[in-house]
Amino acid sequence: MRIDKYLWCIRIFKTSSIATEAVKKGHVSVNNQQAKASRDVFAGDKIQVRKDQINYQYVVLDIPANRVGAKLVDMYRKDDTPAEAFEHLELLKLAKDHYRLKGDGRPTKKDRRDMDDYLDDEIVDETNFKE
Image 1 (cartoon, rainbow, N blue to C red):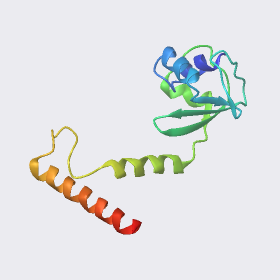
Image 2 (cartoon, rainbow, N blue to C red):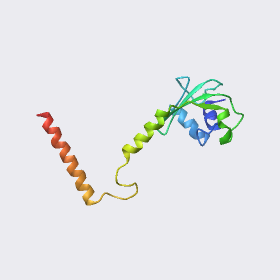
Image 3 (cartoon, rainbow, N blue to C red):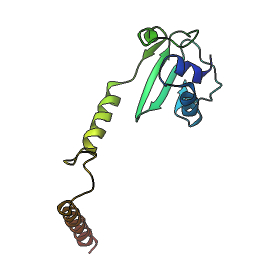
Image 4 (cartoon, one colour):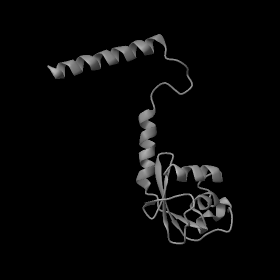
């Protein structure tokens, strides 16, 4: 079975066109080699998929005849993704968080002044180190 069709069949990607696009962009490798969309996969192959800033790692257990239900996916693949990958994603989310919630609109005048003061302090600190 083709790698793009396999990734769609075991529900890693929502549509087959998204799976094909991910393979074309180089987000998928099979046995540590960059994969093309037409590459066949067999039982025992190791697949690495870059999706949502996580490198997922799967082992092919069997090849499905067609797209399978969500409860049957584990019959066809084994998830070997390390837990550190998910912890790294949580750290990225926390690093991006700040007091202002998404969708609260533009910064207020006070926010803008605080940002300007912070940037001015950085510039002063950099000039002190250059001297």
